[in-house]
Amino acid sequence: MGYRVAVVGATGNVGREMLNILEEVNFPVDEMHAIASRKSIGVDVGWKDGIISCEDVEQFDFSRVDLVLMSVSGTFSKEWSPKIGRAGPLVIDNSSAWRMDPDVPLIVPEVNPDAIALARRKNIVANPNCSTAQLVVALKPLHDAAKIRRVVVATYQSVSGAGKQGMDELWTQTKEVFVLGPSEPKFFPKQIAFNVIPFIGTFRDDGYTDEEAKMWNEVHKIIDPAIRLTVTCVRAPVMVGHAEAVHVEFENPLGEDEAREILRDAPGLMVVDKREPTGYVTPKEIQGEFPVYVSRIRKDPTVEHGLAMWVVADNLRKGAALNAVQIAELADERGVLGRKQLA
Image 1 (tube, one colour):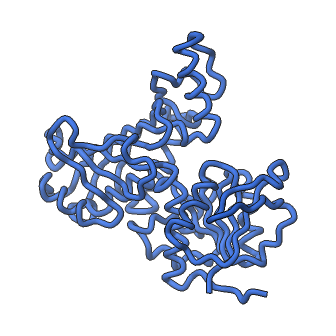
Image 2 (image 1 turned 180 degrees about the vertical axis):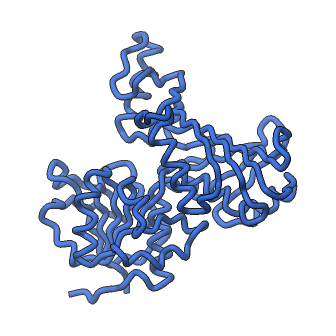
Image 3 (image 1 turned 60 degrees about the vertical axis):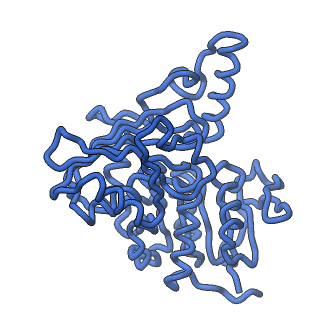
């Protein structure tokens, strides 16, 4: 017997990807509901060999489902996730609304699966930021081996991380550069086509952005609050796939060959690391893939015990939809996700 599942925000990029991945991994679903705001009522989304029509979140009875995957804004989730949780189902939320709530576990299943035991405190589980998700998958096995002191990260984040509007702007600007000449940016603060923008989110008083702060706060909650982390988040003219240049300082010695073997054996990771012109992965190559990929593992000679590496993942999958589905699978395996009797 399967679960009754609702995907809230089913018409968005991540919501649609959640539906795709639930089908790909053959998650046990007896009944699927696509839920959206009133403006999307009746919009069809694909599910298995057919389509289902979106239902109105305001009218839907959430007490009749077991699991709700949320792909909505933080403001929307703040209002709706507690209501849905009180109605009974487990909510897995992809927004930033609940990540730092002490009563809500923030989970990447390959990294901190035992945190699922806290899921029923509020009936909400948080999905981390897309850049954090791939980073912690790569950091955790190395931290277990040699204890991480400090991490320096520069991200190269695709426009799909900003949603459909970001993807549309890159596409439009790219065409206009070749045909009509550059246009004024409408969504991003500067031209994104053939450019990079070292600014994502909003500026804080300390000069960092909230996107950058999310990464160190979430790494602290998921792995270890003692890890020191500094981040520069950069938007790149890539449709799908986030990349990160990661420099790690350890408390104990860890050679590059040993690190390579540790990462090869770690869950959710693939190592592609040959010292030749094509011996690494790029965002284009990993689109649609489940794992986090690590390349260019090498010694960082500027610190006593240091390594540098290149970390790449599909941000719509491991960075969002896939991780949410993996949390649902974990909840199922650990007996956290209860099946209700079908009426």
